[in-house]
Length: 301
Ligand code: AMP
Image (tube, rainbow, N blue to C red; front, side):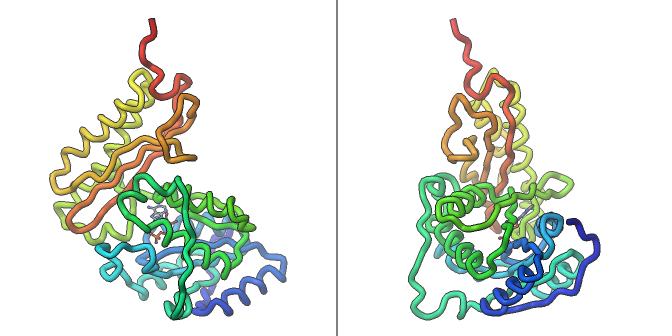
């Protein structure tokens, strides 16, 4: 049921309160959608919240910068935090409940459990950021058990996160549906990200190369005659023009396995990650293949 006007937003900081509020919604027969975030909100987050409001009667948003998903050399301390701005933005969208977990309740003294993620979390982001997906799965499992939503909304922007959490929800039997919102972009194609604010003007000029590279790869795949290796080459050729960024990866995978797509793949995912001095950026593009499929264009005698 779509609702256009924003409603008064209530904030809670404890698991007991969020559970109580969600159970009260459900006791009235209302369905609940949940959008977990790390704050520093932008139009990508807001579009997920609007979609969530279209999918359920009530929307819960969480803001929690989760230390577990940042590696030792990563940007946990520098991650942008602007709570006053976040609150103002949330007043414009149909969110009903803001959950701001307290770190001491989230990870009390003695907290010692991790959700172990499988093969889907190994390549790409998993390789570049050891321990990242285990941290993500642990925090999201804890949030889902606390919030008990009917629907979880995640962004396509973090495609491997969607795959890892989709697996977790299915494998562990979390009683909810996963929905995925498309990536919201700047006019020049740059995917919105809280980390974009940290880019220098020169880095910002090069940042759209990620999306440009994905589109170049997609164009090769659509030709089908040249296949996956040509798509990879096309992506890398565009990314080489980014002088300030170092390419972590530019790959084509099967979105269900995150492994190289097999001959039967109908949809593939192009992904790239580029490390600029001020921020590391990721982006991806799902592509539906033409009937011939990838890598099957080699001429046969
Ligand atoms: P984060 O605050 O970065 O953890 O993101 C919270 C949620 O917003 C995740 O499900 C992200 O995938 C999603 N998200 C982040 N950036 C975008 C974007 N540009 N478009 C759509 N969803 C996004």
